[in-house]
Image (cartoon, helix red, strand yellow):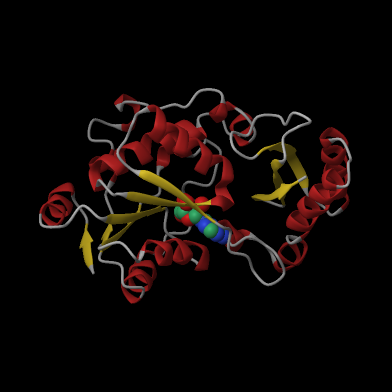
Length: 277
Ligand code: AMP
């Protein structure tokens, strides 16, 4: 596996490669969820991953400094999985004139909703870095997890709006056997919090069941919020939305998703569940 640390190293490799590249952008701290994306990319002639903890998508009081950095283990895991190259840029390869002066990419509306309300600037940081990574890697397909459902929808919109020559493919969430969505941030959970954490997904499934059974989305959301509170979470939101564009659902929409963000101790967990009614 080629480990490209600079743009020059990457471009040298890219110049000799076919265009059929499957790309998996990550922030490292790899787990089975990331590896599922790598597996999905395997049919491409080349598989490329990136590891970059993007400062632009962290708020001033968020966990940028504490975010797990496990580069050696990550690279070993990617190599074992047959990844052809991993791009591990330093900050000046991503933001050459400094992150404050870098061109910003923003998908309005979608980026300020749901998690965007609680993490101002977060999705702008995501779209800005993903746009640059897509320009550098030039993949045919970019694989993203539906675990970060809103992020996946926003990046898909960005690619359409900017007419970028890449397909964004969403991959189903990989979960622990008790239902907890795998996440790098799960390492922050204490044993007691880890035992309670599956309650988030269980609550979302229950809320989906209520809506499937005819309950109004707002009532199901309110019930889910109280249920999460009873389990010891501090919910930011629970929201039932139309799956395709995350708009509030009209009574005739059948493809829905229920999304939530909730804090458990110092860890902010997000999850979602797609369903039909
Ligand atoms: P991250 O390193 O957290 O930025 O995640 C990199 C990619 O892996 C994103 O597209 C995530 O949505 C995806 N991902 C993270 N956790 C999971 C999971 N449990 N199942 C599927 N994809 C995931």
